[in-house]
Amino acid sequence: MIEPPGQRSKEIIDCDCDVMSACLARPYPLVVDRAEGSVITDVEGREYIDFVAGIAVMNAGHSNPVVSLAISAQLEKIAHCGFPDFYAEPPVKLGKKLESLTRYDRVFLCNSGTESVEAAIKLAMWKTNRQNLIAFYNCFHGRTLGSLSLTCSKIRQKEHFPSLRVVHAHYAYCYRCPLNLEYPDCGISCAREIESLIFKRELSPDDTAAIVVEPVQGEGGYIVPPIEFHKEIRRICDDHNVLMVADEVQAGCWRTGTFMAMENFGVRADIVCMAKALGAGLPLGAMLSDHEIMDWPPGTHSNTFGGNLLASAASVAALEYMEEEKLGSHAKELGGHIMQRLREMQSEYPVIGDVRGLGLMIGVEFIKPDGSINPGLRDKIVVEGFREGIVLLSCGDSVIRFSPPLVMTREEADTGLDRFEAALKRAVK
Image 1 (cartoon, rainbow, N blue to C red):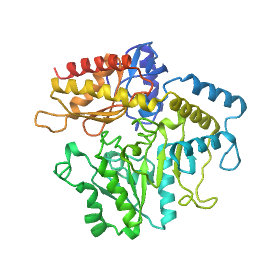
Image 2 (image 1 turned 45 degrees about the horizontal axis):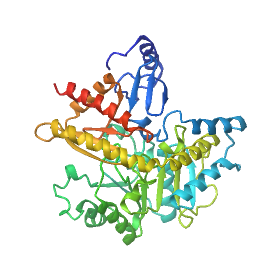
Image 3 (image 1 turned 45 degrees about the vertical axis):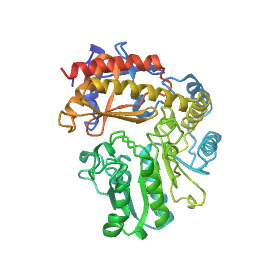
Image 4 (image 1 turned 135 degrees about the horizontal axis):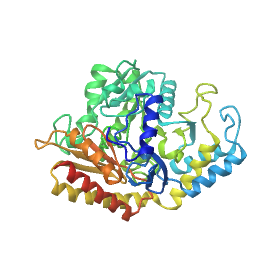
């Protein structure tokens, strides 16, 4: 780790090392104190342009006054009631809001993305009376044992842990096609392998509960597939009576411009998982479906904190704010501007191999002169960005992600991109 920017940061980091589990991985010594909008301030008083948004969580912006007011008002009443055992209005208001935004008429509330995926796995297995699942290489669906069985991002996340019966297929990573084919002449062969290989040699479709897929792969590298990819997955599910589960945990809540990222592809999944930005900074997840599928009886699945009243109030306020402020349209517009600037840098810096994204979910892939991945340079740029005053995180094998709060202004974006270019210039020296 590089040297902390001040004594207060160093003291907190030293204490952290004494008490926190070593499984946590921090790329640089940012010790957060407060934040507003798209700007984070550390304990030394230094400000940073935030290109991460708490890993795509703070879509409505840090310290959003509308959300803060809703939390405060609810806190004065009651923070927790045990919603799975009693009735309360805030979770119901949230459920109705999600229904209006998605047209799914059943909601199960939980506390995180991985919990929403676990709930989706259980629902799919319960409804189909099948236990096998299909997911995709490079995918990330969480770290609890069910969702981790789906996850196929880094071996460290999976080694020594048991797994459900999951077979992985190739995702449409066209920049580095795993089948060495060219789009569109490939005919989306990656998706069609589910029928031609998996259903013939590994899993019977009659034993397969669901295909679980991210609309845009997040942890795997911010990979945006061609529009035909998800349409083909939908067709395969329909033809073989398999449920389609869309993991919208990172891509949802207008990050890609539409409320659900799958809307960009004209596809409707049977089950949807949401979290991250849904809670506006508080722990909240949701699994959505229609009543024909989510018709399991009482006691089949539950939890203690699902439908927490503070999180529900925060979510309703954040969703209403983002909808009224048309942050989806803003995400498309600002995302286009950021990608244009990054592609201008790409023409000047050949270490940038690919710039891709939807809305404000943008990935920049770094390469060596022979076109192979360059994780060392990527990691160096992330650290140099911290020194320049921007917050960045990596993903995939060699990618830096740009997932800022949806409230970020063009001026803030340009200031951050200037700092990013300075970090890049210093890293390639």
